[in-house]
Amino acid sequence: MARILHQFVAGASPGDAITDQALLLRRWLRDWGFSSEIYAEHVEPPLQGDVRPALAYRRQRGESLAIYHHSIGSGLVEQFRASRQRLLLIYHNVTPPDFLTAVDPVRAQRAAVGQQQLTQLRPLVELALGDSPYNEAELKKAGFDRTGVLPIVLDESRYQDTPDPGVSAAHAGHNPLLLFVGRLAPNKRQEDLVKLLFHLRRLRPQAHLALVGDTWMPAYAAWLADFVRQTGLEDAVTLTGSVPQKTLVGYYRRADFYISMSEHEGFGKPLIESMYFGVPVLAYASTAVPDALGDAGILFHFKDYPALAELVSLLMARPELRQRLIAKGRDRAAMFLCEQVAARFRHFLEGVAGQGARR
Image (cartoon, rainbow, N blue to C red; front, side, top):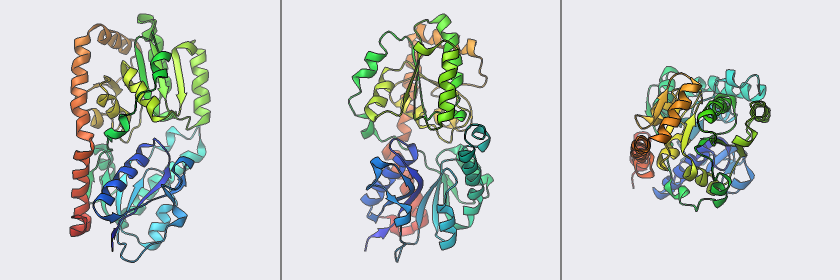
């Protein structure tokens, strides 16, 4: 009989970093001889049939451990507590509710529940893994004794798509093209990128900003679009909404800089993706961002928009400086590729499953 190790997530959607991670872990687990499925409370239509609804889950004989990805309040936690299911916890962080309350009180409440549930999970967890050192530190603060770091993986096969030629055509003449990838949400502070662009266009009139990401919070997305209009930058900012993978690849290949003003990141996968594609990164040094960048990007601790605009303009004028950032970034991104992360995952798995994880 095949060994059984299933994964559970609150929600599964295409392009979501947690969903992508779970899909890759499932592939590895199956390669290692496990019977493994993914169960989710909410499954977006494109993944139905590949990811199973949590209500369909039935615990089987000999199933002693499950993997749970925690990122928001979830009814799964109560199920685990009722069944006393042993868990390997992968913690992706919970957005602090203070960021969300004014815009989406329902999501803010779910985030508050998610923070409370982290402590409630502790008696069930055999091993707790953060996807960044920042998240591991939160696990330790919450009282978990056995912890480690399992980063989000860069699956190179996802980046081999032919880039959407429409991206280059749409941004011809935009110089530089600034990029940020992430759902439109208050903690991401996309409005601060608009402020930077305002100052940069005084130095580089052809500068343009592309904000690639799902309109996760419609109220914030509407406010952001209005803010762009009020600053007179309608023709200088592109709000793409959710895009297919080939379009995302097109943006990474076309961008001159990746810039983040986010004030809360549990990991920050687009930072790593940008370095993989050779896009220089400048980022506000919040939460897990320094963990992701290491010494491969430019971190700033104050949002001095005129000074940052001067820095971007300087980097455009000094290609040798950009090339140094690109080279360091590519070296850094290599640490997050499949081979390195798979070996670490297997090591952790052997620690909780013993000989059962070996071939």
